[in-house]
Image (cartoon, rainbow, N blue to C red; front, side, top):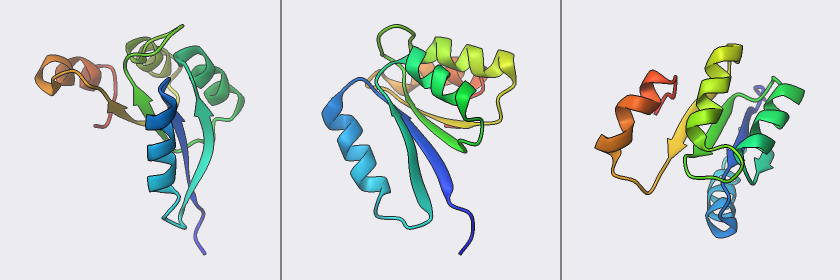
Length: 104
C-alpha cells in the first residue's frame, strides 16, 4: 500500500470539522494527521510535524486567521499544500489566497 496522504484540518467550527473529517475518512489512502481549532494551533502542529502533506484551512479562525497562516507557511517555506475553505465569495479572496500560496 502506498504512503498515505497526511491531512490536517484547521477550522474552528466543530460540525464543519466533523463533516470534513468524516468525508475524508472514507478514503483509505488519506490519514487525518491533525485537527486544529485555530490558526496558531495549526502552525504549531505544522512546525512540530513537517510531514503533513495537505492543510485544509478555514480563513476565519480565532488567534490567527487563515491569511496569517498562509503568510507564515510561505515565509517559512513549508512544503505543505493548502486548500482554503471560506464562506466568503470566492472572487473576493481567491487572488489573495493564491498570492499567499494556497493551491485551491
